[in-house]
Length: 570
Image (cartoon, rainbow, N blue to C red):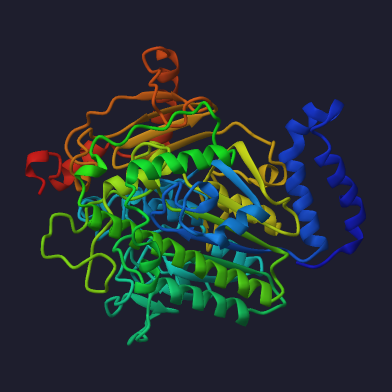
């Protein structure tokens, strides 16, 4: 894009008018015109000045309250610095699971539209339905990725970490617009000893791996290297998708030691302390109630306290190590002179994970070591998601609410919180395109593209008091939700929670529940019986959306694979 500095003075005046439109006589006009005008200003400034670099940092299975600036006790100084120098959104959503979130983040579409309505084709439950276009398990050609659109606009496109939206040739990062890639095409791997063929450099498996290999460390190393080696003539787009703190629980011994013993106070006390910290930071109103301990959790006095303290200590060590890795990426931006004009996004792909990997294995190795392969279990996941209910897989708040931080030193006022604007990962694509001054194409390589579902968040990032009503939808494993304004309609597919590994199997038992998100973000007071008209209206909207994007009835999909009988599922 060519520079046109002659436009700068007139658009500077326009910007002052736009940003002042929330005051006095211009308030109503500002509400109507602000989103479009700010996008125009962003485009004009991009034309007049250097376009911003864009960095998206995605954590894996990170709970809502795990980082310090969202109430957690785990030391995360680098993530906290992003919040101190940027803006936090308190009502930002993912898609509740790894693959769907990544598909939406990269394309600006709902997962089913992009071809990732459930999981990857090799998943046990996805395999029988992979012939359905909405459930094929990898990105289709009716969507364009952020990398494809930004690359066509002159951006350098770089990625490190977890891809998880297509692992076969023709589906990988370099096939979908990225110029450089180091990471994992699949969904999870051993942190210290990935299997041969799992870690890629460009389009080829990297083997043998260095003796000091640890995924989080090497993702940061390559991210910093890509930044250092990038041309100064063009802006860059960097997607950093960590696998931390997704299971297995693997961490360096010295990191574990710093956290050992801190969690002997138990998960109930951790939840209380995190919730108090969240209120003290202004993240939630004083009158909000903490959700009760999950019914499948139990009293700390009944726990194997040494084992459970160790599990959470390893998890905390993984989060802290990821924060240190993020610090390495931020340092590379600073050293390269790009820091001021780089927009950094930070978020998680879903809520904390309660999957029982390694449970009830008496001969299993202790969590943390390279010889172990286990998780931290439901009670700690319940604490990670403070103050919300449920977990990854579900579309209640514990499954889909994510920390969301944006820092842009050149433009965004730091240290502020927007508690009103509702956002979703489908908004990353239009936001990044607005930042870059790029128009989303109607077609690519002769294929007509689906129009974007998301909206630019630029107005909310520039003004923390800004809020625009949204209607958003979710479906995963039959778990369903629609949010419109203050109302959220939600249901889970199966009420059986004792075996988290059986989420989304069996027969539907969860009815529609209705919550007022203005007063009840923790979803404790179901208002469905009091407002049947709202339930009916939102349920109709959900059904129309589901038909439009390609959602299929989950019971029908289970039947295709023979998984619709709970007694037959092992």
